[in-house]
Image (cartoon, rainbow, N blue to C red; front, side, top):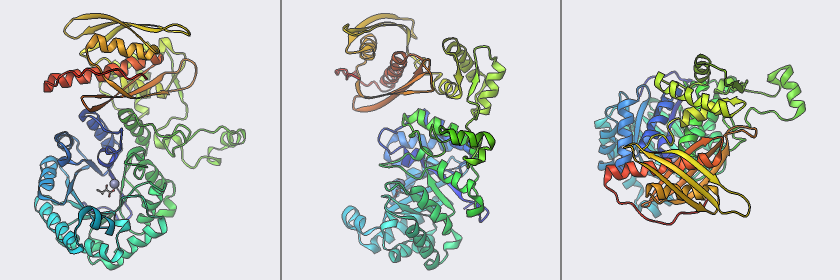
Length: 522
Ligand code: KIV
Ligand code: ZN
């Protein structure tokens, strides 16, 4: 365990493991690498990169993150068995700071109905696993799953045994989001008082949000002595999600005089990181979400606006710029140059190399010709989408739509393949989006089942960009595509094409057959 000051709360991010387990939040390898880089820039202490035994894809992503992301500890999750533990070690050992995280359930309901194991059997499985993991790696975390519903006396026995076996962090999960703050505080105090050697290890809290109490419970745990909080960006995670990283971090920062604790998080990176996770998962935080929601710093009521103009502290307990949100939202126009664009991108917390910056700047100029006012969200959408629909092998060269009341919608396309082929195709549909999707399918020969179709306005105004996320199924695999344009039919077509291109790339790599299925109508 790295030595850190007593008042430092270590931030363990599990967006890529517990967050990714949430329905609709699965990420590709490149998306995971992008999120991992954002977490590094945010300065989280630990990245839980995945569950390597779950699938070869999970193994590969943990391994790539461990090998390429410098700075944070990189951790992988294992059940209490030799195969899982060795798989984690193989995946994380390239990291400068590897960690193995082993878990087994301890509550009565899990012991009897899930594991069918007696209390002492669970203790011996846990200690053998921790000892094996410790023989491979110096940094070992142990989690008694469903700890919050485990009898405290038995939990203390388990915790004592795994510490003796070599665990360096012991995490107390509220797996089903059942705890309430006072009780969770007492549980940590109880462990502190009844487990020998507990002060030599780091105690951690891992809370789920089923009762909306994950952040409150995590804060109660740190008040009782926990010095690691497990959390996810935007609070994504199974069911109601996990403790939200941005909320727990900003609570500790904003109320520092109360908690007397700090984290190492670069809070100005919170908003950009939240946006990256939204873009790759397609899961939007609700408008009134604390810290990173659209309305988190918006003041509508006249009396509030009046107070804000006199002194922003009247109604604002945090400054938007402290979480990476700019106060002056209207930023650049079509006469802005590359230098101003670069400066704005950097102020927003994005780090682009010269090639990326040039590509984004070209997109920006193109968009500025079509759109009067350019907002931060427009720039952000450009950065997140610069390659969408352009990665190939197919590109849309032209898209013509006819639609109207009483007429059948039709789409006509000109597509170009990277090998030089050109295809013109046309199709009709129940609406312009369905017609565009059908034309894309005909032109490329890839038929998808549309499972979900979402449109969000990126900014305000009648020239605002529309962000479309499509979730589709192909060969029983789920894919998500995502694109932004001032024309929502065009963004829908780009999002759909992104998925088609991914399917084709996958077929090329694996030799998978094209599946022919009916188009789902959006
Ligand atoms: O919620 C939970 O119990 C977990 C553990 C594996 C830590 O995610
Ligand atoms: Zn969990």
